[in-house]
Image 1 (tube, rainbow, N blue to C red):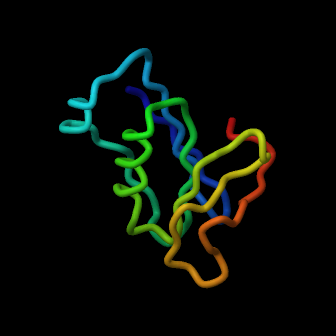
Image 2: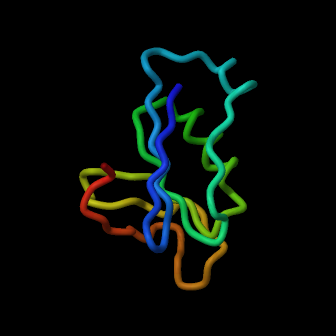
Amino acid sequence: MKFEVKEKEKYTIVSFDTEGVIEPSILKELKPPKVDARKGVVLSGRGPVWLYGFLVHFYHPTSWVATYDPRLGGAVVVESHSPGVEPGDVIPFEEVD
C-alpha cells in the first residue's frame, strides 16, 4: 500500500493507493504517515470501509478528520476536536491531487 501526503494551510491530505485487493491482515503492520496533529486530515483513496475505519481511528488525535467525496467537491468531516468544525461539515477544495 502506498501513501502520499500533501500539506495545505489548514489540513493535510493523506491519499492512499491499495495497489489492488488487500486483506484485513494488512492492518496489523500498516504504518500510515505521521502528520501535524494541530491541523485537520483529509483521507482520500479507494478502499474498503474497514480501512477507512482504521485510518479515522489512527488520525483521531488530529484537529479533525474528513473523508474526500468528489461528488461534493470536498471532504466530509467525520470527527472533530476543533471548535467551529463539526461532523457533517464539508471542507471544500478544488482537488486532492
